Amino acid sequence: MPASPTLSHDELWPRAGDWPAAHANAGADAVLLGLPAWRTSLSPTGAHATPAAVREALRRYSPTLIGPPPIDLDVVLRITDAGDVDEPDGPEGEARTRARVRELAAAARLVIALGGDNSVTYPVAQGAGVRGLITLDAHFDLRDGVSNGSPVRRLVADGLDPTRIVQLGIADFANSVAYARRAADLGITVVTLDELRGQGMAAAMDRALRIAGADGGAVHLDIDVDVCDRSAVPACPAAVPGGLSAAELRALVRRAARDERVVSADIVEVDATADAADGRTVRLAALCVLELLAGLASRPSPAAASPSSPVTLEENA
Image 1 (cartoon, rainbow, N blue to C red):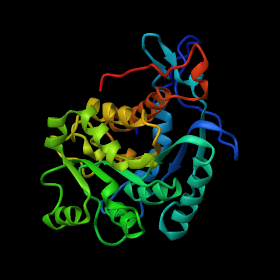
Image 2: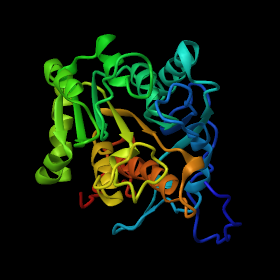
Image 3: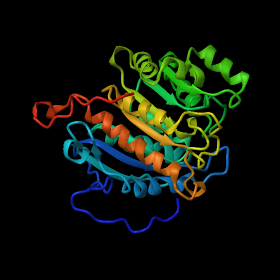
């Protein structure tokens, strides 16, 4: 992402980001974790530069929900940043990622992983101890081997029940018959891009949560930004024209994060080094962080008894 000019300062207009460091055993509502994975990507990528770029882009936005009443997410949520996992690729990097996520998930209501490529979905979901998976992705990610195209298959191979996996936004001309059949044979619920639009964003996500979160089980949300239209996300190597709009993705993310069963999420497949001059892809990734926080703020919480509680907040997904 191109370097940003110096941002103006206004004490009455706080900026998002710059959240305090996460400390072991210290409770938080949400914690960010950078995972600059890139070495197994099927496409050349500079995705290792993205966690830092997203953190920088967050400062272009405020933590304010307009409401009414207006709400400052920094006031109603405890948000921390756990920094990056060093070298998250490979078996040792995945083990470090898994352990770090496990530690953070024990003390936070929502772990938000900043990729990096889609390979991080595998250790993050395992570290969070989830029983269900929802992907916002144009692709199945059921490939053989170890790459950014295989995390869903690897999770199933390691025991995740495929009937508790829902894939939203699967696109024509971006997959193969073999992998479509693999998804069907496994019993994965697949909602194509056209079906997603036909069902409506809110209804489709609510159904996905019922399936992935059956019996109250914990759910991981994989936000592969290449589910969006390529004009909106030029820094996603595998994005195709005709995908979701930025607004549709944001609505889906906030809707999912409202559900207490969603305990972890990743934002992946953005190559910050290949973005448009206006940084639109990285900025959308940063907005997905804020949409996750907005959804989290609308959940019932220990602060529900406070007059400033945001539990009645609604959105127009």
